[in-house]
Length: 114
Length: 115
Image (cartoon, rainbow over all chains, first blue to last red; front, side, top):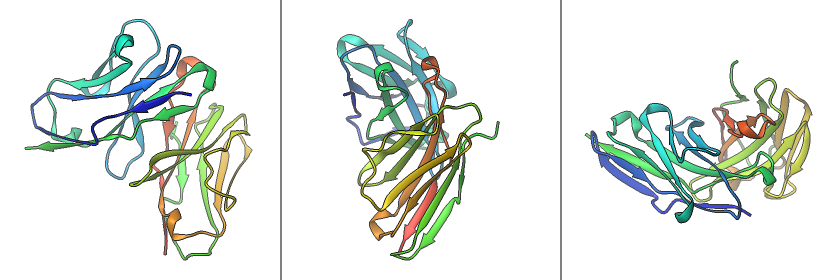
């Protein structure tokens, strides 16, 4: 069975600074990887996804993530954070063998300081 | 498309009452998922359907919870009787059967408060 770990529960970053959120997964084969964002009081919105090919994927809102098979990681990055990026971020893993079921990490809450 | 629609958005009920949460998935999506989100336990998958058939209900907490999908455009999650520990935000999500489109589209959620 697949699993996802997001080691950081909270991260505080200054507006304009860079942001990196960590995600480690466990799965025997090639996983499908996702990052979702949840703004307060809202549902989850897909930021980006990785299925195959280029290991650096671009998403919406200026986010990118890099798949590193050797490290079982799929870290999310943004070069310059805006106050509107304050939200909770979830990494998720799926696998073809598991149908369309996704396994979510525990989430990382990002606070943005002015 | 209007996206995944959930109703009600907020529900306040007393312990022991029956609660029914509703979900309309995105048209053409074959999979439907029910999640529960709490501070303590995070985001938990309760049950999911494929072509209206329940595939995995191992996340349903106990017999008080039941879910149905009578047709491709409607699903319900019922709690009977409700308890204060059921207070949470319940999300419905849907996705397409195409494995290359695995992303799940989430509804806005139903915030349930059981007093």
